[in-house]
Image 1: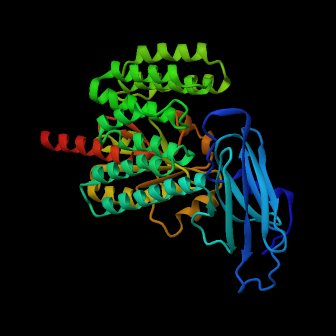
Image 2 (image 1 turned 90 degrees about the vertical axis):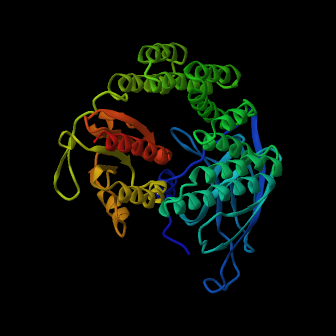
Image 3 (image 1 turned 180 degrees about the vertical axis):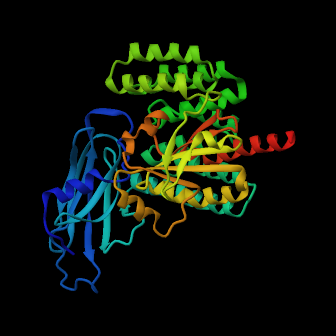
Length: 454
């Protein structure tokens, strides 16, 4: 169970991790410290020596320019290890088990003041969640289990054409909200409550608003809650109510970056309501009050979107070579509804959406053209993802990745991202990866309206 040692091996693996959960919660001047200990063993059929020394346990934080080690331990001959973990903030951090530079297991560790956790691992690790026991980590695993079960049930519902998706979503949201009762004050329960608000929004807006009022400003997901509450308020009471919700949260949140994010949400709320002049005014306020490079760059991109990528505006024309060697021309798709999606072969979440996409395309038939743009600089990665899978619609590989001119033309900042374009070539809507069901609803409304006019 060893590989050739190399200092570049660990760095490469760490930097290429697909999932990283940023630390969240209220910053404490002295940081937060928790304790982790446990035992790592090897299945006797693989290693019968009983000597388990040399396994490394790392808890990491990835910043913008470097990776920091928050906790480190090496097992003794019995496989036992122990370490204190000191983090700048209470939150969830990646944990790795390695030997001689090779990652053997990975998972998440909640770091919170006073929490003491134990971990038991038998190698080879078969996947799933690492067995980390403590109040904080039990809450986090409970949250992840609820989400995994929910995703599986939603997928099955779509594949079977069930009509009770809204009921499934609300039931899961109530379970997430109730996690606080079992694990009060934990990071997992706080994140679960924020997720409950965002999940139930659009299915039960009155419930979303009621729950949002109960979220304290130090909840790690408070910005997402505010955005969801504003969406619910806009649908229920109108634009002025949505703006009031965002401003109330902006006054309450404790951190500068949270206030900036909520100012950006004000811009987006105006934009979603097609109040372009007001959105541009809110954007100028963002530039004035939040001079950090991150927000200045966001403002520049937002201004481009407001002027070129709003519903009702012509979708930017483009031609591209498909993976089958043909030329796709968006202009030639007039008369049909077109979905243009941008995605990454490195995103495992996209892979889980494929069955739902295929189910939707089977239902839509030839009334909809699905154009799938993969952003990947390494063709081998795309081909490895595609092997054994049926990818939807027309496939385009952009080997320039995030630097692609098509990415810049469509203002892509998150993946997956989808545009719905009408038969006249205008943009009908824009949807993040988690809004696949909303895209389906809007498209079906347009299709039904078109059929009634024929």
